[in-house]
Length: 221
Ligand code: ADP
Ligand code: ADP
Image (tube, rainbow, N blue to C red; front, side, top):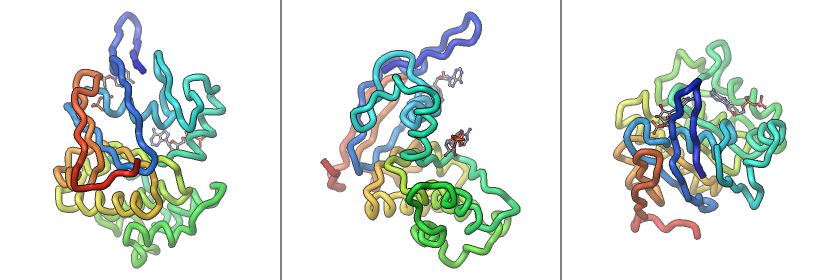
C-alpha cells in the first residue's frame, strides 16, 4: 500500500510501500522519526484517509473500494481513535463526555463501565478542567472504547504527558487490550511501551524498516 500527498505541483510520498498485518487482539506500536509515515498509516487503517495504491483489508473487505459513506460507517462501527489532545467538551462532565458516544453507538458499554476500565470510576462527575492531563486522556480513551470498537488507534496518546503519567495511560490501554481483545495500534515515544506491546514496527521514510517481537508478551496468533 502506498500514500502520496499532492498539493499543487508538489508530491510527498508519505508511505512508500507498506505490507503489514495487524493481528486480531494484538497490541502493536509504531515507532520512528517525525515524518516517517506513522500517522498517515493510522489514518488509513482508521478510514480517515485513503491509500493512493494497493489494498487495505479489514475482515476480508478492501477499504480502498469503499464509498465515503461506507468508510464513515466503517469508522463509526469498528474504529476507536485517541489523539494527543483529548478534545473533551469542557462544559460536560467525564460521564457526559463518554455518554455522547454511547447514546449513538449500536452496542455500547455504559459510560460508567468505560470509565471504570480506565480507573476513573471516582471521577465521573468531574469536568475536564478539574482533571489532570493523564485523567483527561483516560476519559478520551473511555470515550473511544465505549462503543466497543474492534480496533483502537492511538496517535501519540502520551505526547502531552510526562513519562510517568504516560505509562499509566499506556497501562490502561494494555488492560483494555487484554480484557476485551481490542486490536490496538499506538504511536508513542514513551519508553514504557516496550514492556507492554506485542510487536514494535520501526518506520523510516515511509517504510517499515524493522519489526521486533516482544518475547515477554505472548501475542495472540
Ligand atoms: P509521522 O506520523 O511519522 O510523523 P506523517 O504520517 O505525519 O509522519 O507524515 C509523513 C509525511 O507525509 C511527511 O513528509 C508529512 O509532511 C507528509 N504529510 C502528512 N500529512 C500530509 C498532508 N495532509 N498533506 C501533505 N503532506 C502530508
Ligand atoms: P461521522 O460524522 O460519520 O461520525 P466523523 O468525522 O465524526 O464521522 O469521524 C468518525 C470518527 O473519526 C470519530 O470517532 C471521530 O472522533 C474521529 N475523527 C475524525 N476526524 C477527526 C479529527 N480531525 N480529530 C479527531 N477525531 C477525528
